Length: 264
Image 1 (tube, one colour):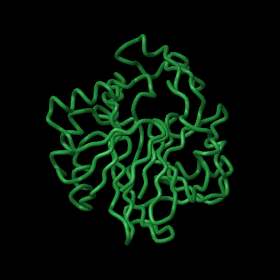
Image 2: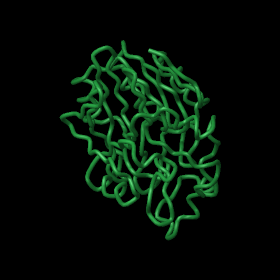
Image 3: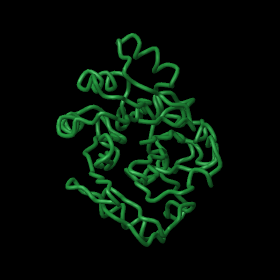
Image 4: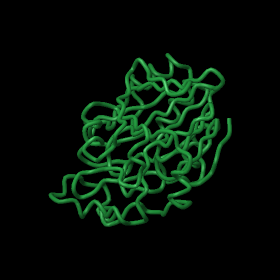
């Protein structure tokens, strides 16, 4: 198994010879705009200066053609603009191959991709979906501690010749994550961990305290930290996370740089 950190929550995962592209946010640096640009100003950041920061904060670490090369299927944990490119007309994923299989969390997201011209849209389930020897199962997620800012999901990958992989997605530590860990006991766990936060919904994804909870629950697992350094509402950078986890005594994690490949 190879896991390549692309940028933010975008990952290339190769398992049992099949390559999956997770949450492909391919926009060029700064082209998504900033929170202050959103009509009606529905989201308020704790630091108003950050509302003026254009996103993504960094460019992709490689050409888009290399990100997309030899991908067998796409998986979208949820439709938010830092997980899938969104156009002004409401369509999504313009740069993706619209004929390839694309897995989504629910029928509502499926309808968006179908309206965007994708011809092979598949809805994930808690019972799992088979893709050429790889079983992909939808896992629960809570995308906000005060009020979830929409539906989101995690992903569990299982294959006969591979270790089980759990990609938690945009979630905080809560009972659904604990139950997923107890059910699958995944040796490899990917967590989204920049502690992104807005006033209306609270912290939206994991921070250092959540990483500690996962690490204490699964002390033998390899934990990979992602969704770092590219959104303005992040509360923790990679640099800060290293210090915070050191103070908590957590060492069983990896935090790859953009473009880095991890092999398991």
